[in-house]
Image (cartoon, rainbow, N blue to C red; front, side, top):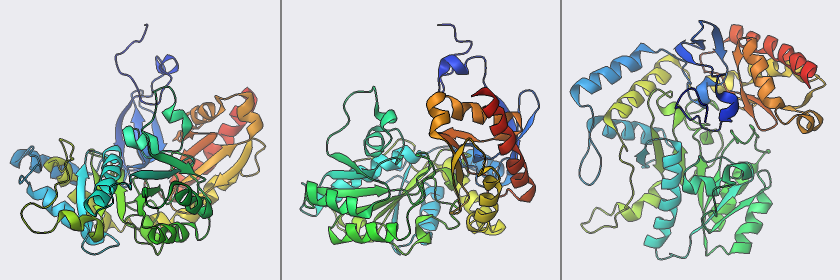
Length: 422
């Protein structure tokens, strides 16, 4: 082993990373700087989460105050802390279903696993313990925890780590009829939940067909299957609404969210639970069923203080609608390369995120082409994310015309560089 440092990066070829790290040392607004002092437009909002950019003093001040007052306290049993109570109430007040409850975790992966367990626990408590099967979508991404890996539909993420948990299956991401057929194949009496990202993020920025979300929600309701909207990426303005899924006239039973709930400043996730699912556990009587689950740092007071300050920023600066206001300008920016010979498809126009997919010929000839394209964009001063067969962008909601102009200028230059290499 010849690694220069002990740090092991997630989702990384460490042989390639070693000696080629991009070490970011500071951030301000839509920009970050590396250890050589070079500035980059952060067109990924780090990892889909820096929705209000970097370097907000409001977060620093809120975290500092909370650390001085109460640095940590748990939520197990009867324990509580004031920031967790206040943040849960504010998140629940924004939820599509009035009277929702909020269960905190340390991030998106935590709340995905929580959602799987709670869906099964709900049916067990309502006399249907056989309803344990969970259905996900091809190309869906739901984190890398145990259940999240199983419900996710990216085969590479489940490869080489042994058998996956039983009672999971997948359907095409864009075919509502396929979901109903799978429920009927398994048997509605055995299916607990269907997990669905409003816009598939890490699986390639795949937009839902017209009417798809309304139809799968209706199918779930018809078969008494819980509809779980995974809004870890979609929420907090990314699609122009608070949760992303509330852009459509559907009412999920469970909503998973994280990332932008603190603008990425401190790890925090939240599971929003509709009243009918919470009801068996909130009877108000001694001896009510206990949901025996919870991460150590669920509702950590410092993380929740950051969350409260984050919601203040979103409201005060009017950032939530920008995900919708900026979707066309972003689509226009990435469409600058729609006719490039290396480009197969541009996916944009629904929220402030987009993808550029390379042609099959390019990727088949050089599987490393998406990484090379990402590096070429970086050389042009713009950070994008290599994803699948291309690259994706999800800029901070504070980005404006100058930043989108940078992106529009960088992409064709980067593709020309790639063309010279492939």
